[in-house]
Image (cartoon, rainbow, N blue to C red; front, side, top):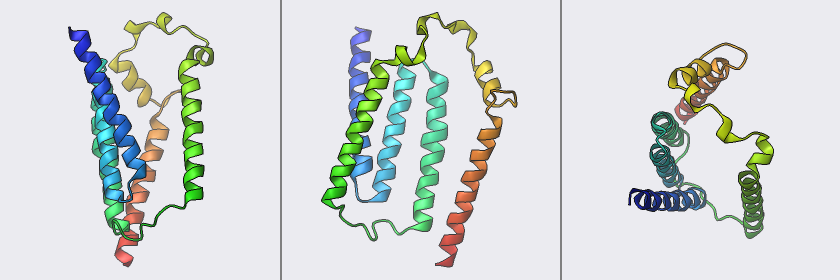
Length: 173
């Protein structure tokens, strides 16, 4: 009975992700778009928790839902008057956007269904017991060959520059 409950929860959360994703890109009010993005990120965290990836779920909430969306909202409020100058999209651009979206769905679908061909490995052969939170933390914050400390710091400096730029633009007005 537990698997039926998990399946129902999965489909409800997947429906929330699909609906809020569509609303994120179709709404004309930018603050509502950021709010729908927040719902998508929280629903993604629910899927991580459902798969027993508590660390990824916590990172999803803390970094993306907590940090990035707040940064978006501050940037929107500092640099732009919400709802001002929102124009209707031309029909030719809508068609181009729909074609691009369908092409993206086709590429993602192909990638999902042909993943074994891209990966050239069997995922069941990966040693699950050798991957721990400590090893993930080591690789994320190491300066080794495959470490991510330098890109992480570069992105943080870029986000800081964006915040400073938003404040400078807002002060000019």
